[in-house]
Image (cartoon, rainbow, N blue to C red; front, top):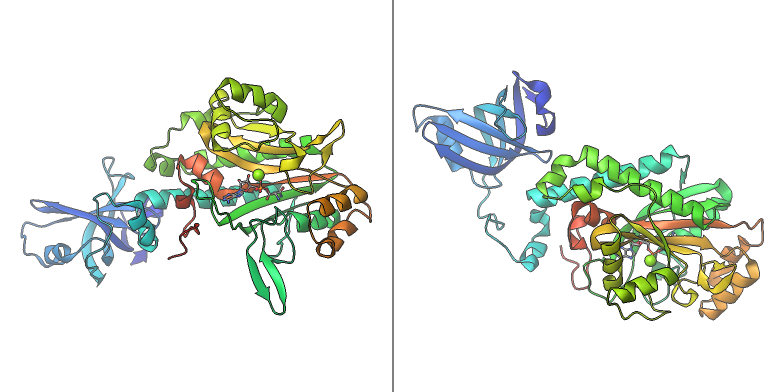
Length: 430
Ligand code: 4AD
Ligand code: MG
């Protein structure tokens, strides 16, 4: 018999098929038994009829428990009332394993308990929906850049130097040298951009962040485009297009998952170009008016990001942050070296920063001075300085955190649910 996946079941109306999966739920009423099957691609209701409650089929059915693994064979029937619009009339059930005492029950569990059982929690409808959205976000990001002629460049995970400051570096041994887990592929991307024009890297990045927040992971995935000859405004436009592309794709292809998550789609559907642009200096009085105590020179915290998103219904691009709070490679504004040509995209509805980037210093002397001022070891950046010696050009790029975007689109308040196995300050199991 034809083994089919639940998400394709509509193509097999009236045919006999085999579904391989797990018992999600079951109930009986008189002469009917209902089995809700889960096969990883969706849920399917399967029904068995018998006048005899001791029939062999019912005996098998009655032994099944939550998460038992089964192969169910039967005929696909269209049924408007069934979730998904199709049902399976069971002809036979083959039990592979009876699961005993599955720890996650329909009752409420604490988050620590669920995190401890993350390997099983992934099977629940909500987690399943979030991770399907994640897969769609990742695919749409790749389609976006591939479709615009960007070359994929895989940058290294083991690196000899810091990109985003030395306080969040994970150190590891590298034979008789030290190495760090990458915080960002950017510096390498700047080299590949000079070789290929426009590039992107996409991979896991690591930050030994001591802060325990809803928005920080220790290991997260970042997509980073870098474009030779591009200035700040060019990459703001690129980021805007990327966010809209991802949003539209997920809204059209993962609507069912967003419904499972009970996400209010209206705020997402309203989002359009252009996103408001705001300089740090323009944002400050607006924040103070809303009650923030922020002083010039301080970075935005979660409260400031939330306040801004209360003002605008779409993501906001904040530019020209104080030089002192930004990374060493950021290009100072030509009219005011106290601020840099950097940009942060703050998501709507208080989800905070989803993109960070900007224009890079292309002047060799200034870059060398910055490396010194930031106390970075020059030897480790010799190759990076070379990029400014041989055909240096203005160039810009950014990084978009995948988990932040998934949180925002799914309406999930805590980032830990947006990656299959989150690495958190106090958790590395399972
Ligand atoms: O703003 P960040 O630190 O920028 C960079 O790393 C640049 N080198 C990127 C570039 O220009 N190529 O990080 C970029 C994005 C943030 O906007 C956020 O979405 C995400 O990465 N991010 C995190 N996501 C989850 N957990 C963390 N600890 C994160 N830190 C940053
Ligand atoms: Mg940032």
